[in-house]
Figure 1 (spheres, rainbow, N blue to C red):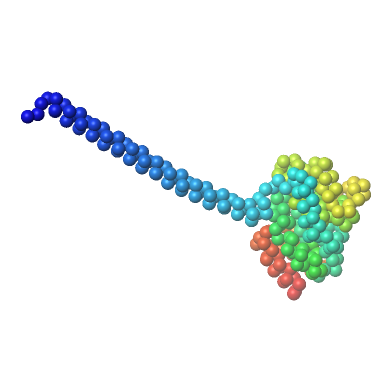
Figure 2: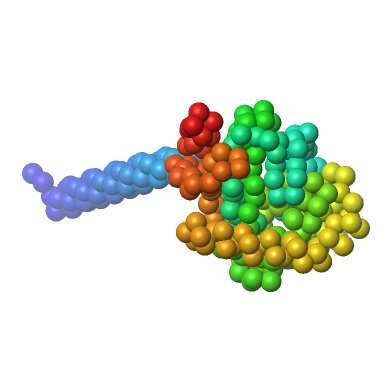
Length: 275
């Protein structure tokens, strides 16, 4: 026959079992919640990894992605000079023109030295065109100035004249390439006299005294105005813009599909060569 004490013990054991069951349930729920969080974190980590891969791919595809191309040290600067020299060294230059004056095809390249889209072309499709067509004597490229990205007209004039002044020594294309390779952040005011002097010092064989004197030549400023008029006649409002044609004949607008991949430019050049 059970006693009150036995009933109390049974009740106590029942309570303990219920408490234990409740505690196990809490632990199970906690573990389940932890597992869910772990799964979510894993999924999030995968997503983050994918995004990072995409970003890296875009950075590579856009030639580094950063517009902050100003070298941080002498090693970086020397590497850029070596790259530019390898690209245009040994090719005839005459003022704003790169290539043999008698090349059968002429490509007019309207650009603004501070234009980041021009930089995409200069570091993207252009090197292939220089190696394949300019170096072989089939194409010459004329660089024309058209203000689009530079915020201040006076700064635009100063930087473009600096490039044209290097052209007085047949080294304008060195200056242009060095500028685009070391282009700073747009609208950051990076184009200072010190910046331009630094570029000039990097141009192989450039006489700095002669270059400085040439920058005051009114003929160079006039050529910028002439380029702007030519762009207006052609209906160009942005940079880069291009015209192509037989050397000595009329030039027509070149429509391109990509500034980093040269196929549309190559097609236009081949068509002109066959015309």
